Image (cartoon, rainbow, N blue to C red; front, side, top):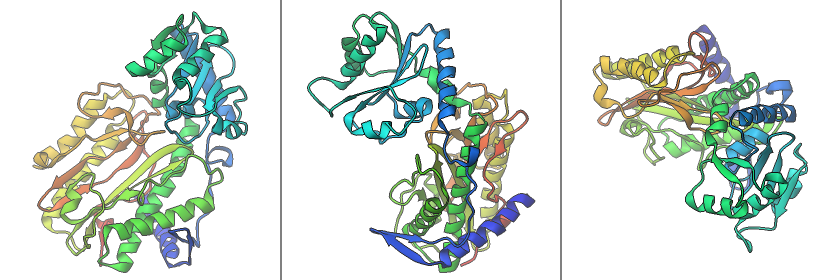
Length: 433
């Protein structure tokens, strides 16, 4: 608790200085200049994983392939390509694949427009096609070239393909055995190592910062609209990222402005889109922001009361916070995902608000904002140390509004480790306007 309170004082000063600073424009985007903030960086001072990490990952993947007797693995999902090779790219309709043989280094099969960019990275073996759609199906084109690499009769692992894609895979490598093996990479992605968690910890600095900017903007401007909060927050965090990040890759602020900021009765909509409503005293408010650094996603969501909360608002908030704290405590090695969900949400049910539940306790988070496993009913995954999740139970009264905190949490031996540092208690979540 003291650490989180000290963090709020420090970050509040940075955000306040940001909003009071100068402004400049890039096209239609207004960017507020920061007057504070020191780059920290991830592993080795970088804000992304370095080539040696990916080289070790390829060896780890090959060990898993050997268990399944696979001669090769072909990955078409952009997140899996990034996870195994570190090759960041804009995923479009143009197929792009990573080829991992059972021994040796990987290769990339890419559209020609990616060729110059690939040359800057560590994977030196690649083949290109001109563009999409082209004279032949590009999935078939990829598998024809895979077959020519000594795999005409090999066992080739693939992510679960559509019927159409499977047809083209078989057309490209008719003598090979195509084996569904998507869970191989999925399960490796579940557990993050220290380097990945360091990148995610770095990302939470930006997510927490964005929440505080939104809070300060409201405190200084009063009865604002949701899109005004989003615009001010996005401008500030974009400027902070441009000033501080040493490796600008895999960084994103989702459109239109990068978050959810519902208030009043609309805060009872878990995924409320922005409106032109104006904030007023007595409203519940949720500031929900994510951040992505080095390809890894995190999130920070905080619930606020505008002015002194009513007794009913306190009861709702306390129920939400009890569920949140229980969820964090239960995110420990050996726990079963659905049991964590049940124990967290039981706190809301015990408070008498079971009818106001709208969703699960949380979801896996990493290269995707939402990924497996799920802290939800029906997911029987046994948690392992190093898995990362959101913890975000919420309570939503359509006649009043909703409250939801979300932290990014690492599974540890005895309880979850929260990466975020932003405060969570009600006395620190009151904004006077």
